[in-house]
Amino acid sequence: MSAASKDIKVVNEKIVENATCTFCGCCCDDITLTVDMDKKVITKAKDACVLGKSWFLNHVIEDKPIARIAGKEVPLDDAINEAAKILMDAKFPILYGMSDTVCEAQRHCAPIMDDCGGTIDTTTSVCHGPSGMAFQGVGEPTMTLGEVKNRADFVMYWGGNPAEAHPRHFARYAVTPEGMYTPNGKDDRTVVIVDIRHTKTAGVSDIFLQLKPGKDFELLWMLRAACKGVDIPDDCKDICGVEKEVVEDLFQRMKNCNYGVIFFGMGLTMSRGRHFNSGALMALATDLNEFTHFVAKPARGHGNVTGADNVVSWQTGYPFGVNFSRGHPRFNPGEFTTVDTLSRKEADAALIIASDPVANFPKPAIDHITSDKCKLISIDTKNTPTSEAAHVSIQTSTYGINTGGTVYRMDDVPISLRPAFDSPFPSDLEVLTKLRKKVNELSKKANRPYATKKYM
Image (cartoon, rainbow, N blue to C red):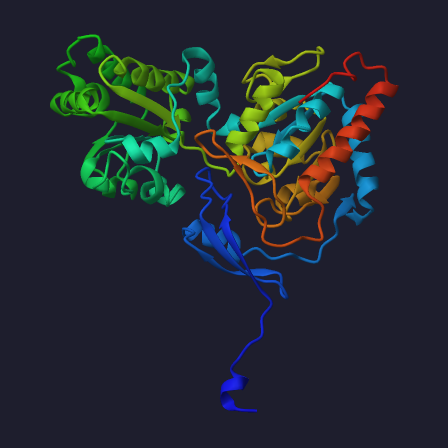
């Protein structure tokens, strides 16, 4: 055998073109994956950002039980039956998560909670929940990221840090790409960053406004007032930390652009003011349409958190924190959102889907969800503190890598996934379909009056 032939490695490779990265809300669908089908690993992720590469290249299928009850391995159907019984026996069951699974699986969650008279909540309640409340209060001047790429000559990021959270947002959609009406890329755009500190995102800005913490609403209301002909106050700097002249210049740029967009993050929604901040920002974008075309959009985090909100909204009329205990959907953030129900020790059963509240919720909520007073059920793609603490734990395959389906990009555009290789674990869709069927059977036996409702 020649020396050259010894160097040749025979690998059963598979190329997956136009794969979708589901790490963040950008859902970039132009990734080219190289898969070693013998080892069942992804070896290359062309065009993915640093977060996407980590998502794909570190994906390993581990040799672990599919289902466990009280730490002991059991058949999947036994775990599903136990989970259904727990939910039906509970007085106040809750379902939380869903942001890292496909819409086809998410659509089974509301019927499950409806049949057992529980509460459904998505991870939105701890991030852009205030935005969801503001949408229903003032509306949403919206767009697609394709429109931004091709048309936007004024781009503002408010209370977010996409350079670290959404690395390709700049290059693919908003700042540097060459569009139909922005052929020179960044040279055709004014980029403004509004934040309380200088982040990596601020490094790409033409204008950086450093606000006083908690003064977002005040600045937004000054800009809204300016739209109605009211002068910016002389003590603007004392109020919000930005010079009057800077705010006046900003307003003129916003008013005179051809197509303006504001992306906003949790720095706006989770600071003092909450949904009032989000409402003020979207109302500002609406006001600016008296002068030009202006839109606004939250920069969402999880890969399909937007899909979770859309699916729950289709089925209930509300995006998160929806309770079915009276036989019809009721929306009341603060009462029915998961952190609150757990912190007040109200929930006695919790179904957690593709989320890890034990690792990131406030201590009172963690203490209750891991106590004997709350039966915990976990459905996730990996072992987490939540799955380890769960009475019933079911491990599933990873969406976008092992299973297909539909996700919603942060601009509400649906995208179909192209999986790279199979997994020995069941999909979320398979597990939730079986769980929905079992819960519905138990609900009919219990003569629940709403056990025969029809859902999309």
